[in-house]
Image (cartoon, rainbow, N blue to C red; front, side):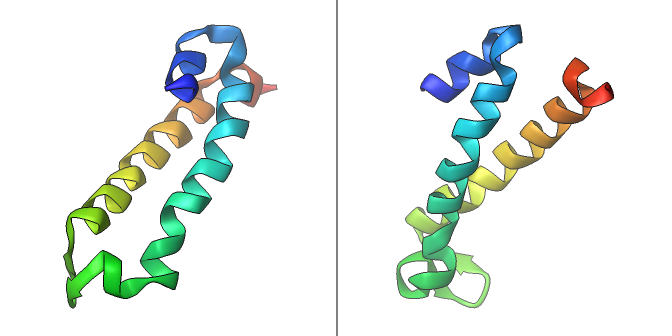
Length: 74
């Protein structure tokens, strides 16, 4: 929630990105480290796996925000 709020405030984008990176790393770890929790079978995620995969969309949005942000164009 804090990460989302900091993205809404224009001057705090760098802080939001620095908070998002460790969060995404820890969210993606079970996909690789605990595959029995994340996958039912080949390319069939469990409910927890779907939650982890959903974060790929969040990462894509952050990449878009960073590419369009003023601090990235310096």
